[in-house]
Length: 390
Length: 187
Image 1 (cartoon, rainbow over the protein chains, first blue to last red):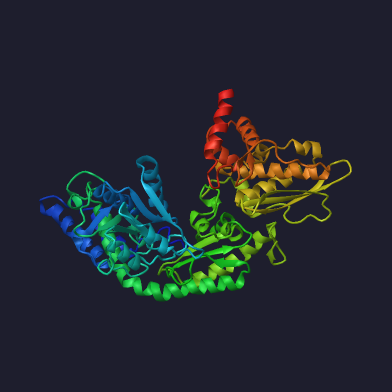
Image 2: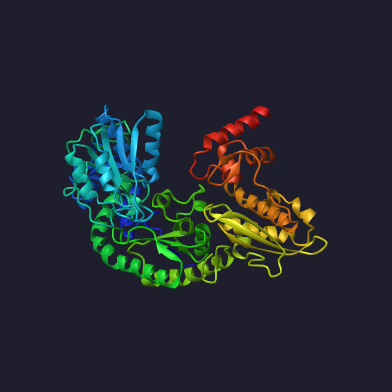
């Protein structure tokens, strides 16, 4: 069965070019990049090249790139470093739609360390209450941390504008850019971010490798305390293979960025228009404009997400759902709840997230599969009759 | 992905007895759109109180659909007295088991069946006895105590898996813990 992969906000295919770049370092080139001998040093040089490629991608200095094991580690390291830099400040500002990678850390800090955390709400479109954000900043605020793009809706926060305001107040600013990276241009020289997290496997590198950008001048305390690696900012022998893959993936992502905003956006818009037109009682979650070009989060009234996903899965279509039943919790996603999306469509919300590997034919497969799937489930639903909600 | 048995998958993809039942003389409804699953059960009962036919309409996940489908297959041909003895475990067993977090789907089947039988017999199901614990899913302390005793539940997570209680806003989780402790204390 042909797989139609439209779950790229979950993870992405490792690019063939990335695999090719990594292969020698799985095998004969196994040296330690820190070694004095030439054998190890050739790996060290390759890691250096990768660091340069990653830095170039976001217009950073190579010394500002710290490799980690994943986006979650980057997020944890960033918050940890901020709180250690300002031990007397006990307040954190974030949003109420953050990823669990960081949201659960806040819950932990609140519970065990007595931190006060302000969760800035979003409106129905998933856009942040900026006035409240700015009003919430105080001398006690150690850090403001906000995701750049939401993993479920793809909604973008105006990070450049926010970073500037936060910076003017002299408060540290971190952004979780895991979803934004490779989908919109990011330039750390133009943005006043002190720290920025991203992850390899969202941009066609392997899983298990992340980056924390740390602006020069910030006194960063390591999260993983150990050896001298990453200039003392993250102990542990480097994951050389994945770092090398990450570097290549960043180089490719730079080249593919224009495609994201043209061909991928067109595919997403085509899918969106067709589904809205062919399936009554459907609606898009999140702001239509301030949104990643690859993400479509669409809700279908009176049906439930897990059922939709399993029926799509039978046809080889991979997507995600904000439905309670796919996650083990019983409420729909905290993002949809924060946006006050009505229950009638929240439970039946499906996320399609595309990459440049997707084609128009695949969009047509999704459309022709999804229309009868929704119909079949509605025929079964007590809340749907004669073409509408009851 | 959930670890569903082949029976669950089969009853989800090829549900038996779907749709409104013409001539139904008993209906039982449970769940709501807000909860994320809902079941409307139709029964056609003859004068000897035998279930001649049954059908369902369900909004929910795969195991909710499969539980509904299984329920209709189980009860067809039974008398109402026989059907009244059907438990959520019977539904789960019929499907070769449900994942723990999905047990509430079988509970939903049992609940709709009770309501349909009451509906046929003209019995009003009185408002639930006990004190409301979970406001999101309208679960009382007595229901929690019953479920804990009947199924040997040990943690608040178990309670949520069976009754959904605490799975919404989560504000009642401490209260559920108290109820759990009280049952344990009494042995």
